[in-house]
Image (tube, one colour):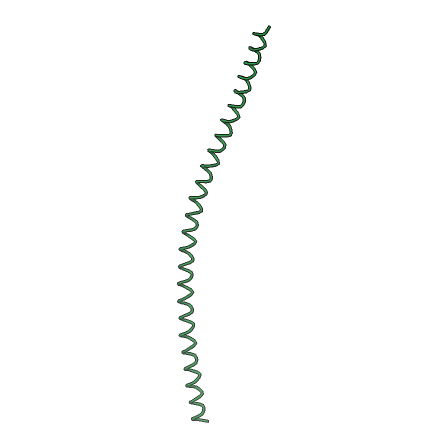
Length: 92
């Protein structure tokens, strides 16, 4: 009887270990899939970050050109207004 009890206990332990092994394999597979997905997302995030930085630089350069153009146009406008005022004073 003692042998049959030990045998039954050993069989339960084997079955428990088998179930735990299957569970651990599933968890490892899930962790691997998660790691691959995270790595892929990281690559995408890096690419997106590069594109955003490039876009930012272009936008800043364009904004600077626009500000310079605005300043030139304002200076021209002020000169024209000043010239017109002088002419009106001379003729008026």
